[in-house]
Length: 392
View 1 (cartoon, rainbow, N blue to C red):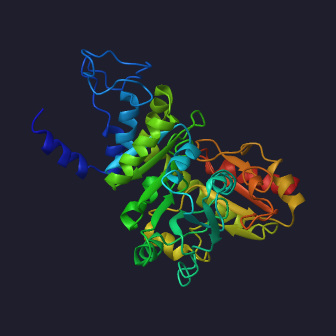
View 2: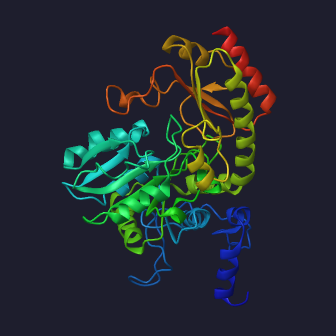
View 3: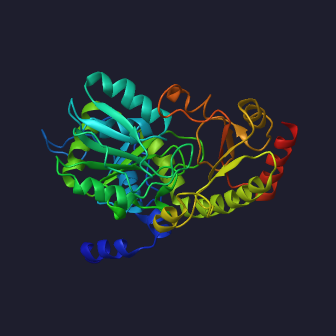
């Protein structure tokens, strides 16, 4: 097999698609199986008291989970990765790094589930929070409270697709004269194929692997990547102590999905661009929100830190009623929550995914429609939206 260190150096030089297929995916030693086995076991035999082969109990560790963590860490360009049972379980683990009295700064356009977790769960144990316009690079950091210990960035955001300049926010975190501020970036919308936040100064990257990384609407999961060994050790402790771990079969499905992430994202990008072109010219559309548009305020930041603009598109129509009618009139776009899978989805964020942000600083416009553009034939997707607009 050669020198292991040489093999590691070679793996570091692999391209993204090669890493997606081969990182953490060594053939099974005992059988030669190309695919990582699903180690469906709750415990592992020890050959003596305290003497085992690296695994002792499945909550603490499982070889299938280890393979997934290695694969996804490689895709994010990270030294470490920790997998969880859901995206919110991953977020929960990150927030457990804080102490009572610490303050979280999050964007004023954050995912409703993140907002609910911070404002209704962690606020009960003494964590405070405030919402800010993190896309305003001129003012970012100037009004953060003294107790700020963590800044939570989504880019592009859910559901308004606002782009935050990661490097600019990272610089403000480092310039803090107070205690160190940890920068977390939710990279779910962009995926590591289009954006790698650690390279722009983020300390932690979080994913709902339910979305693009899994990619097939058949598994729920979460993942955290970091280059900070201390943070990694703390997250591993929380992973084991709290126990919100993914099952072996869930790890297998996520690994399988991630192997095709590059080819899927290329198609998502292409299809979304076609949908945006149609929406931009449609008389019933007030505004199209998409980072790839040169008219988008965050376009320059997106062009700097992203290699493509993704498959998520939001747009606004005349009214709440019109938005509801459009969302209910499509055929190929399924009316459903979630995103990032091969099939196209449509939703009304104000009533569906972001209902928990109602009457808060993060409330979304009620005339907003969010699309997760899938990998079907783009002409069919455009035609479906056109007929829905006519029906509505």
